[in-house]
Amino acid sequence: IVWTGPSSEVDSTRLTSAVVSELIGMAKHELLFVSYATFPEQEVLSALREACGRDVDVTVVFERHADNPTYAAIEDGLGDLPVRRVVWPKLNRPLRAALHPKLVVVDKKVALIGSANLTGRAFNTNLECGVLIRGGAAPGNIVDHIWGLIHAGVLVAL
Image 1: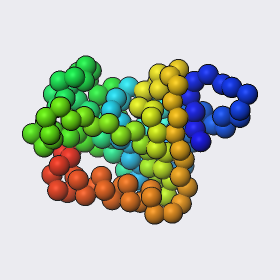
Image 2: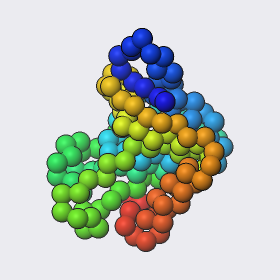
Image 3: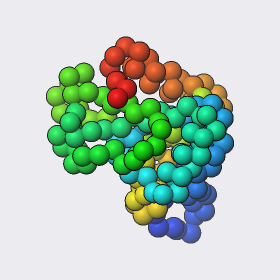
Image 4: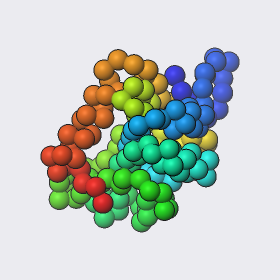
């Protein structure tokens, strides 16, 4: 279990920011982020830049105001990062639908699925919870599903 936020008497194991940094650092081939909001803190941006420098194929699927008028941010918050940016265009979704998953998958082998967006607040301030899955079919199935949506034209690379 991965947490962000206030602590209790119960050991809350690992912080979201530490786990995401570790996941980015361990990526060798492929890194997939899916997040409603994408405004990562500088540490995460630097780790993503390093991953790109190691020739890790980084894909970020995110929400945009152009596709969802209730989403307030105008930019993607990723700056000049050389990552594949993917969106769910307004024309391909039901009325008022939102791109809402929050997940990270590394090399189809490890997945973090939870409530935290790819933002500094979600990684450090909010009360967030996630589950880290190592091995098994789930991490690969998540990646295959997202790529299936891309190949079908439901999700679109910018």
